[in-house]
Image (cartoon, rainbow over all chains, first blue to last red; front, side):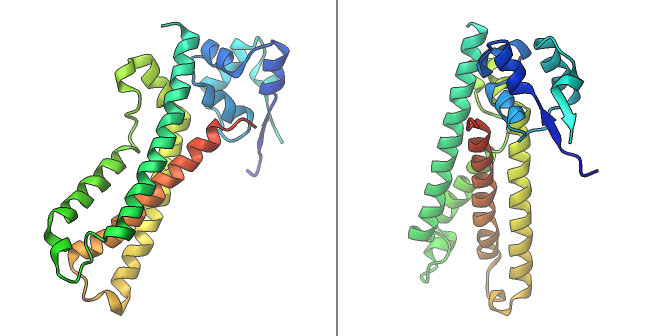
Length: 67
Length: 149
């Protein structure tokens, strides 16, 4: 179980020209939460991962990968 | 208040809380070094007002680990200020404090030099660094969470 969670949140957010604050507003979380998820500091809950994927119009699998 | 403003306000309050908590803890620790409220040869500190002020101060600082930020700004701001990341950071700070408390308490129990300590002095020895470590860990984690990277 030594897997680490990689994510493409920053790339997907930038592709949609959203700031961290704008994405935070869409998802209903703080900017700090978006920042920590992007930096790999905080592993999001399943609910948050699903909300992020929905806000960015993609899937959880496209946003998060195990490495 | 617009959603964007709510997010920005919560961000500002969260940063301010981290800074304020850090300054408060450093002041608390500095006062212990300068004033030594419990350990005074004349016994004044162990039972006088300074000792009670220390206890009130320590208890008030511990409250900062609870999700109580942003209360005056309404439920939305409060939820964002005390979000999953902040609660996780507060728990991690409390866990760091727990291990410090256990290490010092076991040291106080085991070391012969501590046999002459009163219960108050022992509590002071355990609580002061525990509060310091728990809150400084919280502040460091919060600051890292805010840092763009």
